[in-house]
Image 1 (cartoon, rainbow, N blue to C red):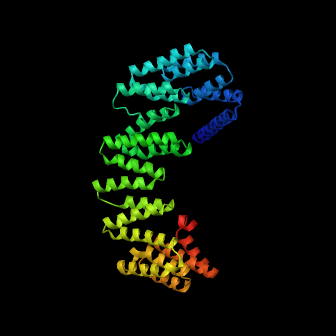
Image 2 (cartoon, rainbow, N blue to C red):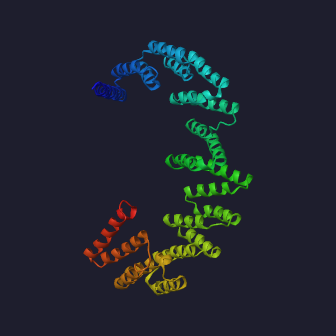
Length: 409
């Protein structure tokens, strides 16, 4: 019974503590700093070593312009725990009082701590960044890296250069990091895209293009061809991206998959001229059955989209020849469905189109291939105004591929 009573008491205590924390945070986020201050002071009294509670308490003091109380609390905590980030907090407290001279003294002391022990960089740089003291944060990272070459803060420094609007250094730092650590390339590209697209900065895009071209010329590593190709794709300059992809393929002719994907992107952006040039290159340079079928599928689809009724016979013949060349199998499902769609919607022969799809469904298809075929079949039935039959096939797809994109479609 004593153990049970103790367990219940502890449970209630923890619950009450959690509620107090939520309440203090609620007042803090609401901007009621007087009530938030009282809440965080109580929390800090119960858990004095909690850094988050301390920083929230100090922030409340500063929001209420209780700078003397904040200074005293920071100094007492620094004397007790000797945490270097508190020097930044102390400097910032003086900065809020518009005493920049004293603020600089403490900021410089924090930086000096890094010189004595580079491992201090983590807490100090975090404190500088949290207070948006970007120049000091950048200086801290540089010093730590100089003292310990094993440190790598290129990504953090790149972000800081961007926030400081030093685009040239941001690009240079990010590209250095991408090359040294390719596993970070996508994360860096996401940051670069934000400046290229979200902010619509043409000057930035031009600066990045020049930086990539210079690196491509100086360093023969195909890494830079890949990066330049990626850049041109973002700019929707697919013909220039294709030049880079060809250069990559000539030096490393392992796969044409990336080039086929580039053709697909060009098609999606309605740049069919470049897409056709890319796909023709693929057909000239591969004997891979899957890639050849994929390339021909894209090419014949573009022809159908841009054709007039007088060319229907020629397209029908070409589809027959492609299926004769590659055979009727799961590998050629895309061609079979293209043919079914063309016969049903262009030649206005829905019965024949349905027959082609039903024949395809007799093949050994996986779940996604079955869904593709059923979708085409349902579309044809919808075209024929056979709504109940169409609904059956749409419903089957939805049930068979729950939560998949195809099911939602």
